[in-house]
Length: 328
Image (cartoon, rainbow, N blue to C red; front, side):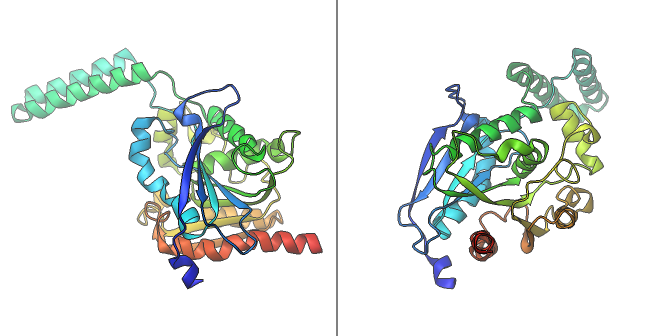
């Protein structure tokens, strides 16, 4: 295993649009990381499909440049260090709700009043007021963001695009998964639209053999997330669909990779990842599931050596499980 991990596979990246309506929207595209000299152990037909994380903000170029430096670590690890083809999927994003004129006016008034009362902060107050006004204008220009349903629609279209043989050969064996909020979008899709993985006439060839969640947000029960869901979706977390203990998870082998310190050990934030309760829940439903805890954190796991070592061993579990199931 050590020699294999130290081998860097050369690869190429191809960008493709996955919407059937011909959309050229960057957010509705995917990247295919394909090794030029891939694995020679019979596992070269395995393809990992990874929905990228973004805090549900999506991947408009502005945010893509900010988030992609660590998002790209996932497909680069899977492709260049392990030799598997990896597909990274982007989706439309929510955006902070446009504040009402009253809210804007009140905020600006408060900023100016503070600057007037504390003259030594007048420059800071002026800069803050300008920042608030520019942010409001940016939100007005951006318009309403995508809903969670829109995000799930994008991921569903991306899966069908891949399974139909347009991105990789249609006889590929797929491991589908997600990182961070990407895991939440995918898992919510799989739980709440149970027929999504049924083979259609367009995608009979690509078989899904496993589900992989890397440091995935699998619960929205942490109360602190109300601030985010209200801003992005206009809903409290209790009114949002989520994976944990909701819907019908697919009866397909799951691999859950979690970090010892997801958000630097802050319990109120770590609760959003919910990996152990999710593992216990899947186990109670008799769904094949493996859970791995790695010494890393949410921000550094994708490009870490420990993830490489974990996936080198654990991704084989999907193919071995399938082989055992077929022969039994």
